[in-house]
Image (cartoon, rainbow, N blue to C red; front, side, top):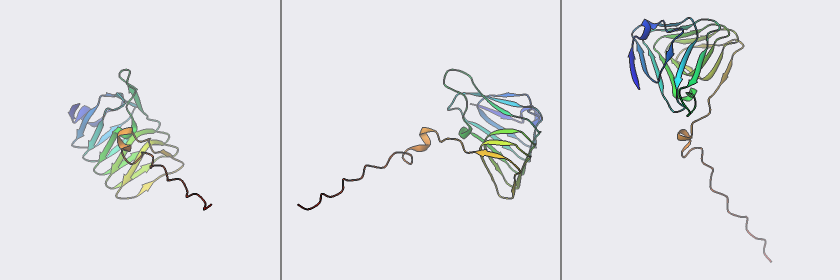
Length: 155
């Protein structure tokens, strides 16, 4: 995995991003769609020291770099020190953690999760929690042992 500091000075629209840790000392602005390219098990961590703004109709695309599948939303984390503002009809992938507040524009969508220490404002939005990976399920997602058979009635 790569470590990228102040990649594109925070104006990352139109970029193809590979697995790794991306850290910005200031804000990040996404004006055009971005692509996260990697495998199904690859991790992406985005650390934003200030705020993240995403323009209306922008999308995050997940693209496979080989035969093992595309990146998964549950392996993408955005840590935002201040706030997240998402424009109308945009689409995000991953878990977004914002300290102050989150505002979703009308009809924007998220495949992931959003958490904030402040308010989360939504209007006609769709949020779908990603499926857990098999590694996340052990032992929580395993089936419980079968119940013993009921006792036989007395003769």
